Length: 477
Image (cartoon, rainbow, N blue to C red; front, side, top):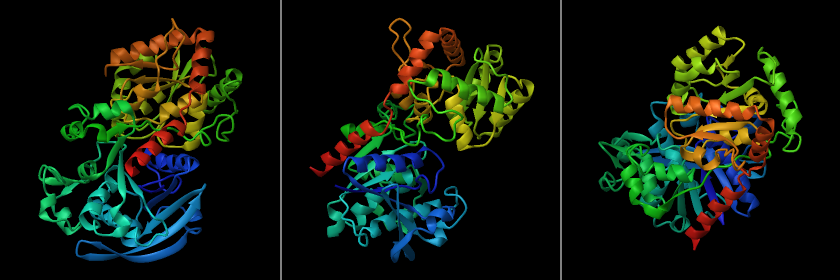
């Protein structure tokens, strides 16, 4: 089985969020199952030279973008046993950053068409193209519209994974004619039409053979008005074509037993003393009082309402009257950045606000915190809670999307569970569940059991890769 995984970013070459991690770790896991899966992505100008200098030029050709014919080079690099193809075009791709340009519609129209054209030139007989989010979701449309008579393309099946429905690639309808060369019939409610514009993601949902989203709960949520982002009717109507497969994490990368970025290594059998050492040294590094009686709450997050930061804002003054310390790492909305900076100045022994992003500090927070706070308004899957559990940091989450699917709330009567959760998007519920978690923390035996259950959960890609493999196999029957 040959799968081409088309994506706009992939670790370690280009990363803005969890999509990049999935684009590295899922193919890695699928290759272990015997799937010949290869990743194709843009060759951005910001890809470090450590990688670009090792790439091999395979071929070049021209790509039709409406009436234009644009250069396309294919570069190749095998990284960690994963074959990567890079679409090379300096006009569209050699720019700072990856997204947010006025011509993103043209840039990703080009990239999507280039992926389709590359099928003619790769020494790889593709059975399935697996596309991801709006940036590549027009590929199934293009295959049907422009390549139905090509022997190399006719048999190709398509899978679309929606990582976040909020971002849909909505552009003026002129993009359909001028860049995608699609006829008038595609400006239709049952094809690309989205109000008076077109939606790349809508096209992908309609034309892909299978649609996957990144947790079972999220797959159900996006069929509702509250979470459907205007596409709930369409998603409700596609039935079993839409499935949820929860993301995993790379257990080789996220491993407290071998992680060189944390202070002291440990595992599920040695965490009790060694994790505490990580906590003490993190407190010391951040100029917080060093104490095991104070519960260290960590967050590594974008500072936006989507991540539940407005709930934290409404309880923060009360929270800081409790025996806790709060460590924040991240950036986002200016208002929330300034809020955390203010509290860090007003409560220097209670709050450490790190308004930036640092992979090294993130790992130290995962390893050194007692509790990981993730009260998201919406969370398609979530990676942070999985990493936190891997490092023995107990998550407090809201029951939405992948958070509900991956965190079993602790039941003090049965002793089962590896986290804490609350249902309603309400600051009183958040405050109550934090107080409840603190009461359990004081019972060291109970807390030790929760941590052990969290650390011994299998949140690797093993099970999820198997589910994707079954999706592929069913399409090829």
